[in-house]
Amino acid sequence: MFHNILVPIDGSPHAAAALDEAIDLARCQHARVTLLCAWRPFTWYGGEASAMVDVQQLEQDIEAESRHTLELARERVPQGLEVETLVVCERPADAILQEVERGGHDLIVMGSRGRGSLRSLLLGSVSLSVLHRSHVPVMIVHARLGGEVLSLHAIAGGRATGADN
Picture (cartoon, rainbow, N blue to C red):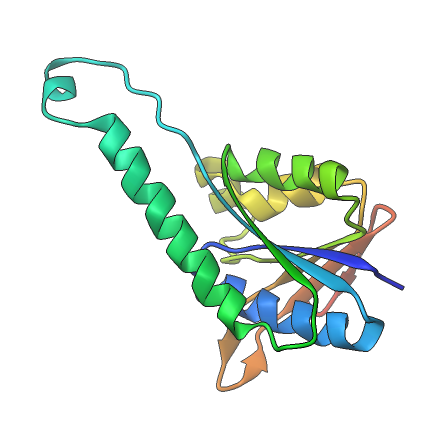
């Protein structure tokens, strides 16, 4: 039984599908939900463009957009479910794993774009990083098409389960 579910939110259809699954689980298990929106801080290497880019303003804009995205997700959580929201300026995978420890979460439900192993290796994948580094179960959900979940993965105790195995 899960009591404290963490749902990373990034505004994607995959994150929305994950939120739907987390809401269903939270209702059934009388669990609380934490919505987390994390964005990577900028590292500016200078050069001529640095005079034209206001990095501080850019980061403020991204944080504001993250808060807006999180509020839209919060509005989707039905009354009666306990929900917390967090915006964090940290590499997303690191922020998710740190929040698991800080908040005592016992499940992560997150979306994934489903790029596949090679693309994820080249481009990076937050869900893959979390999946391999988490000490709590991770449920990975792909976007819905016509109301159906395209695929659902989970890992518990180092053993992968789900529709795409």
